Length: 136
Image 1 (cartoon, rainbow, N blue to C red):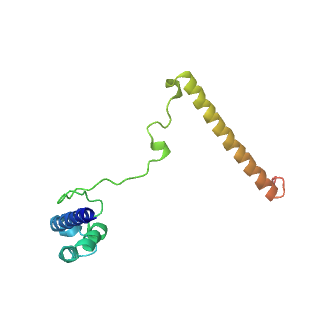
Image 2 (tube, rainbow, N blue to C red; image 1 turned 135 degrees about the vertical axis):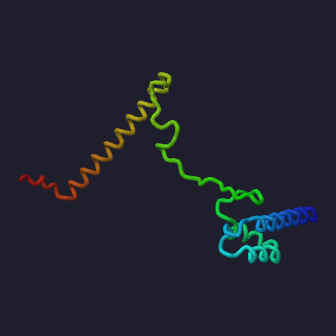
Image 3 (cartoon, helix red, strand yellow; image 1 turned 180 degrees about the horizontal axis):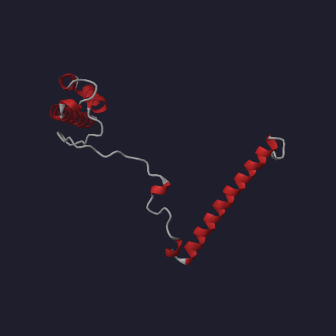
């Protein structure tokens, strides 16, 4: 048990030292929520909690984790279906069995979409009381 406590203490000491250097090397204009000197005092006088608070609420958004580095990680954006590299793949480049399976899957998908649309149209007509369209 003593060994685990020592490892935890070393990890917290390392986190504290990292956060002190990170606050000192971060540009004043990039600090969030509080001035840089206040962040330094929080991290210095409240080592464990202050370090965690700095990482969550004080560090610049999207900052890299290298000390003193002012470059930012790129935003992660969701990749839609149409943005995938294999979207709209030409089926002729596939082998015959794979191409046939893909064509069958696309056909089943289109048939299912058509069936749902027809069902929705029937429900709407029933809701309207099957009134014939107005003729002018």
